[in-house]
Image (cartoon, rainbow, N blue to C red):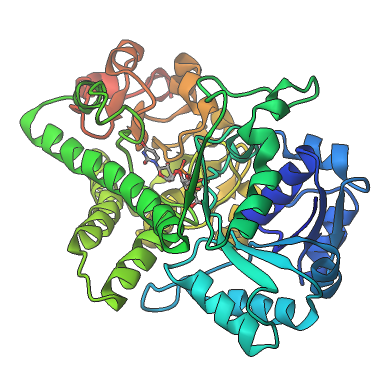
Length: 467
Ligand code: UGA
């Protein structure tokens, strides 16, 4: 089928590339000429597993980039809207880009079109798109609006798209529902996975996804409610972690105990410095605003956000408690991205913590395997960037782990100990077992577990003693 995807951000670029991968002819559009020029030259704008490989595979054949929404609309049967829905000042989603695209589609559409909202939007957005289309010259029956939320995680977006748990389609007519089924057919019937060139499925992937056909409002709510529930799980476990610290329990044991109940499940029960990224903070606020708009208070969501913000402050207090004073202290920071596996620093707890430490007079040397180019844009020269973990640690008075990169979970602890001025680690992601840190002789502070404090005579490193 000929499909266009309007908006080449995270969701748009991944969706466009994966639609091409499952056999469709795709036109991916953005009004940012610079972005389109980079994509058209075979470059990628985001750090995402398998994406570059698929872009190279389909670029100039089934996948074409353009700045013309008009061409895209004229040539396609289904038009996916994947433009940004940033937060307005009251937390509600700003839908002006969605509206503007809907108007353009209305003005240049010829023949029947399915307009698919894939951006994360509040309930009733599909109704508004429909109204905007009619106000701008389309007649009922010439088009349908469908809600088809996306559940991609950054870092695993390509395999999340190709091997989803569920595909949710909120459609009001049979005609639109049939078009959507046809688009997703290779995933629904498992035929994509059987192709020899298919991207291999991740461990534990479903052989075929649940295909859930709903009314548009349900589809829209499923997306907001899913993200809000995942954020709630994280805030819940972080609150439990804080209790663990007070009573001397261990959050690793508690999480395992809770998560092994199949009704709860083990995922999203990792405690740390709180959730970040372009989705959870924005979507929790937007869902809260939507509920309020419809007369439903949802104070639980305020608590979710509050616990999340306090989690960073608690970590900063731990740094202070471990180091006594902060002014002038040189700290090594591992991780700037909002989570491991991505170069995205939007709403990153790591960046917020680094900014607070700088405000309190610390000198920070940071390393991140992928996010340093982006971090320079917000931290500029207030931070020294190192080329690897051990260079960052050299001479630092403590090491802070702020992002759960896999690479940070298997460090050479003896080498690290030699590089640091004092053997002090503050781990905001609980990447290490207490027993390993104890054996390696570190003062180790993590989340929801007892602090490890070797006696003060051991606190000085051998190099300090030698010096
Ligand atoms: C999230 C959802 O997981 C996707 O399903 C959804 O499609 C996406 O938002 C979106 O709306 O576009 P993403 O933001 O890429 O995906 O990242 P997650 O893996 O969900 O992590 C979000 C944050 O929660 C990160 O800061 C991560 O470090 C933190 N987290 C996650 C925890 O602190 N603990 C956990 O147990 C899991």
